[in-house]
Length: 376
Image (cartoon, rainbow, N blue to C red; front, side, top):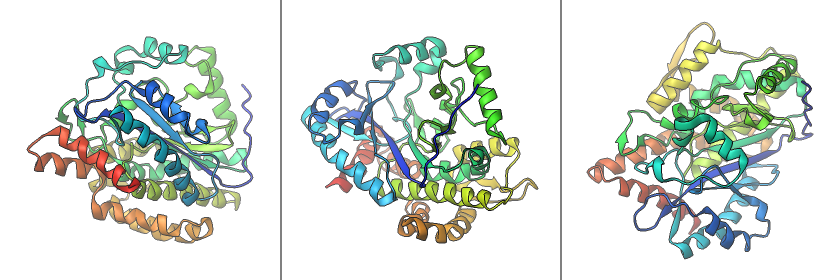
């Protein structure tokens, strides 16, 4: 099966930010995306910046094609400055995390459309459980032949991105013991989870052809890997991160993803054989980051050397600093190290729950206020 990749001449970025809708009084989820859309889209200069998602309790704010992290953040902020007041009129707040701490999946409503209905029809209980939100970042790539090698090598840094963004420790009223319950929930869907580590584009084409032939998927977008090519856009799409509640966290994560892809692509273009972890190490690192977050001890290489994630993160940020300078995101990349210092979202949520004697409404309040405080 031939899949054309439309290369990006520049390493542009695009960000997709999923946000849940919560009631201002009860702090439970609200199935009111349609009403929010009706109010917000009429006021947006570009209505295409706001998307619907699988469930009516979710909106997705997206950027256009951006050259820098700062441009992407400005784009998102401009949209939220319209969406948040529209939500105010409906008694709705935006909630940025990987999961909601106490909402029940049984009362959530599916967005109309054959594609969504068929997903639930096929996946049943697991599909209906998907009360999860994330951040997706596209980075433009100039050459199809380097997409799969860069994707495979990027997985070496999977645990860093997962731990930094982890924001889903509490599920259905219970602390799961995981920093990111979302990471392990989402991989239950067919074609979701870790990608196969193909060396050549032709292997990816053969895989997709097999999936279509056997009826696993009807179209390419149904390959829901944590990192996947987006051939129609000419990008590599990173879908590792949990939902995010602040621009400070988001800009740091986007900068790290941007720098990683650009660095790996430049090294591949120079003829370097990119480092790749065995799939069993990649799988273990994903689990460790989901379970232990920033306290995870991760596997660094094929020789099974290990290190504390935060120690390796410091080395990684230092190594990528020259790349960040060229991309105009030096400050944003440096701020990656601020996340462990102030606590990742999963840590902040647990601290609120502890102070509030387990009151999960207080956790939702805190997550909501983090975003509102930045928007003024």
